[in-house]
Length: 402
Image: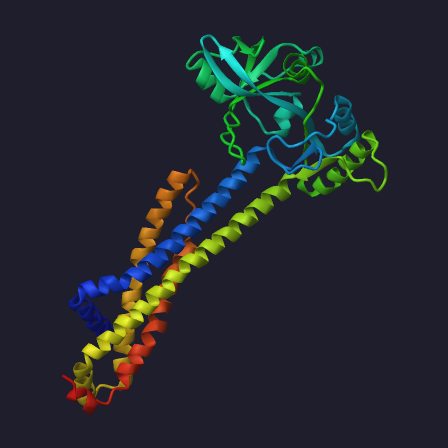
């Protein structure tokens, strides 16, 4: 019986192909928009988390001043000193490393080529804290760090832009007014969470940077990598106590530095992108409502056009529930067709958008299944009123209609 009803519904849809297609558009657009928005939002959230993970695991970032987190933070507050780093190293437990950094953009020259580069002065702990892999060569020795030797490691962007296919190890690279010997090549990391190219980098021993690049002993950032995630809060409190003591901050006075937990930042950014994805999905879902209203409208028109047919069916013994089922099935079939087409279109749009935005394609089967289920529910909900109206027609009055 149900299969016969489905065949009748398909026959009715084929009789009015253009009208059926136009009716489907609302459902198609709604389902496609929801799937595309949610999939792209999930991919963006995953991309943010991946970029933040590239900065290092279980990491705390200490900066002078109370400025917001991001490139160039620190303001005009008193910078950190090497003795602050030494105090943190000796006073903290449960850490993988404590890495001071100072940075400046410098024009880097090799042969006839040049490139604007972020030059970073740091220690060997930096490679551990930031999870950098040395693909070729080596890092600094303790003697090179203490003496401020002119040696450096380069990122993959520098290798590509300045060296091309030439082997960089052993070559001398000019940074501003002095040159350094390349002793290592770093593995690729790609863009940071703030959009900068992390591979456009030259890394020097901290004292070499201070003497030859900066002309001062300022340290703009101290990165602390904690061994266990459960110890992050304790290490942060201990680091704050050490820095307050080192910087002679009176009890009750406000800190003149900031220590931020990268795990919390990652969680906050992921939560923000999730909320934005939900809002975009909710806006897109409005078109599903419009599509449902379109189905109800077309089914009401269909009931009006087929009044005589309905009257004949009722007159020869068809039950009200059979007429109700017929029109309800037509509505559901229309909605399901729209749902299937919308799912395919939504996934295609999400794939194209992911490639264009350079984010992972993160299709969630649960979202696809939910979109399909919602399209069926829309068919039932918005098709019920026209179907009930058809079932309640008086056979005699229906037969009188032309």
